[in-house]
Length: 403
Image (tube, rainbow, N blue to C red):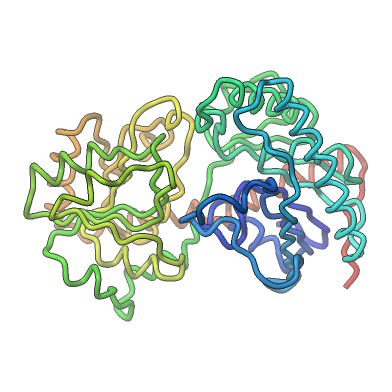
């Protein structure tokens, strides 16, 4: 694993929002390295929006805080120009202006921390304009999703595709989370590699521990409890599936744990007696909620957005030892030996019943073995091998941290 580096992380996920790949990686790069994690830069219009249910944008105290040993989070001021719903030329100009502003702010924080020529690890196309003006020893573009699939207007999609192509072309090293995502970019960069997302194995394996207590709001529900954990958004989440399952099996408790995006209409689900929307829960509490579920779901639509994703919840469910029933996503079907795959709503019903009928305790161990082999530690070690190789090839020394 990388050690003794200064690392600058541009992210699509605020440190205090629902945890995703950037937070997981940053938390493990420190304290072996010194890390500056930059929260999402937001426009001056953000203050007029309703609070984000994922906790995004929330911050108090100094703009730079050491949240863990040698892990600093910088929360930029909301001074950036809006990008969304503008004509392509205007959106592109706004994106690049924001990049110059952000780079100037970040350079100031790097100087205050004494970080010189860091490894720049970029997870977000929206930070693309802030990459060129940062002195750095290496540029990594780490692609966790196809973000243009979540942008409703054609101009916005075009901007994301334009900056994504430029970042792929100019990076020293590109990681992508799925084989389908790599196929989109074959030929764009000589150092392009598929590295799947991982799981916080030790954390989620606590769901199988005898001492873990199931929270009351799920423990009191009629069994069986069929549940899903994660962000609920309109591009991926299949609300019709949940309605179908609830109608077909009124004796089942369908449980959703996680924040819903502001543009997700949950009204139809709120009126169903055996559907329980428990809302957002801190990551520390999730193993206890998983322990209270008899079967876990990846209730996604099969569409252009889900064709390219590698669901973080997959390995988390497996680490918990729970039976998993998933839509037939390209990134998930390769795990069909430990995951029940459903290609339609009726098939979901059948596969859940298959999972409920499990009687072999060895299945729990088999699932956990897969998750253990796909831990975040393994994934970061895999990425570190590529980072060190490229640094050696280009004869660029690591930006050593002064202890």
